[in-house]
Amino acid sequence: MSTSIHDVSVPIFVNALRNMSVWLDKAALEMPEAELIVGRLAPDMKPLPAQYQMASDSAKNAVARLAGIGAPAMPDIETNFAELKERCAKTIAFVEGVDPDALATAAEREVELKFPNGMGYRFTGQAYLTGFALPNFFFHVTTAYAILRGAGVSLGKPDFLQHLGPPNIHAGT
Image (tube, rainbow, N blue to C red):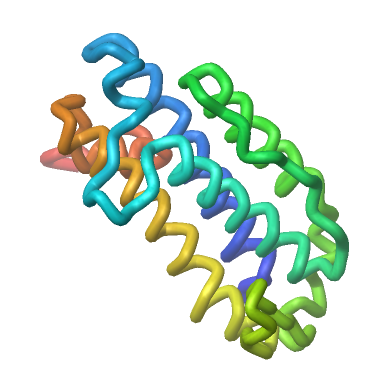
């Protein structure tokens, strides 16, 4: 049995977006939202909402490009945790709603990524997913995590990997 593009994209995007949503719940219990929402790692980096928006865009655009369909427009208007959580939920609904059969030939599909300046890249679907889409997605996921963690929210590796649930191997078994 081979691994499909669907298997190495949709569940990964969904797990991380669900984790990101839960981080906001934890953050809201520990620190003032107004303080965290403007947080950034460095002066030349975008703040927390933009990291969530760009993770969302990375996931939905990747799946859409790989399936050869359009991605839903999601204007970057979120200014609070509730809106960021809703954005995560909408993104999850979209990527989960793409028929796995639409991704059946995605590994060989040509994907063009064009930037506003007219430059860009041409990839096979597999090279796009593994060389650009997933690394770019996790850059923004990790940056969001680091902003919250750096601000003092008690996040740890178990929060980043919470989709795994509790360990399923126990001492002596």
